[in-house]
Amino acid sequence: MTAFGEEVTALELNVNGPNATPTVLKEYRAALAAYDRASAARTQPDALTALRDGRAAMIRLDARRHGRPVPIDALPPAAGPGRPRPLTGTGERYVYTGKGFGETEVLIDRPEPGRPALVEADVTRGEDETSFKIKAMTRTADLTKTGDTLVSAPYGYHGRRYLPADATHLLVTSWSGRRWSIRVAPLSAATVLAPEHRGHAENEVLRYNGGPAVLTVQFERNQIWEVRYVCQCLRSRSACDCRLPAWPEDTPGDNDWSVDAYDLRDGRNTLRLPRPGFLIIDCVGSWYLTTQLVDIPLPSPPRRGRRRRPGEPSRSQH
Image: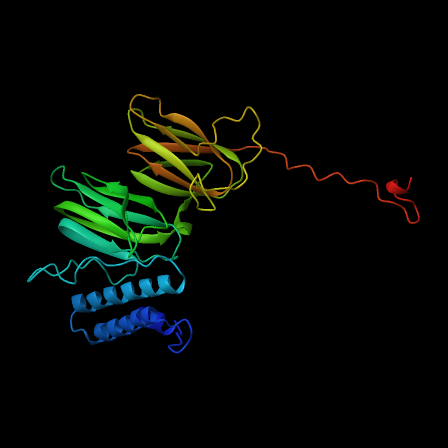
């Protein structure tokens, strides 16, 4: 509550200023009211419920002030008489937890609003092979779209996934009583890719800080896996207009920015890394990555003519 109160105070919103539109003021007053409710709450669930509403108002307020699509909350405050809405918020910001059956929508509070993020998920192991999924969703006044499945876990799960910038909600579907927790973190929190990197996880996001290089990817046989590269500009492959290096003709790999293997392939492939960025690993089982820098000469400086001595006529005067 203290952190939330400090955040509201730090807004320094001029209620009489030109940017204080009716919708902005509505969100601002909703945040103030939520803080008052949290301060007056007598139980922890009541306080967390008020803070959840206050955080939602702050997320909408920030989106309005910076011209981003404003997320909406399509779920009612209560699912029906005697069935309160699931409380997913915790005392720690950017962390959500839950347990039970059915679908739960979680409004995403990003450490870096408007930018992609990391989703770290933990799911306890169930007694049987029951479905558990986390999907990225976009729910605004102008668009409702269900995006990619970030997690699909019939058993227990721990991993990190890349969360696109346009997602506003996480849709959690559980048909068992398993407990789950989700943490949203900035991309800068991704583990740095080492020259030799081993892992055993279902999903991972690694940060690459080097120059042009060839990444060799090795996975266990008989596994479905994929490795994708995301440029440091954080745009999609089709939208990225960053200049590619002048790769030597004998450089392994290609410029597709993704490699994959299925079923009986040997689980080994190469991928060119043109510049710093992020690697998204989607697999089941052990994996081994090695990075080898490629010596690409810098472009030659532009040729310049001999500098004229004082008093020497120019070439156009000859």
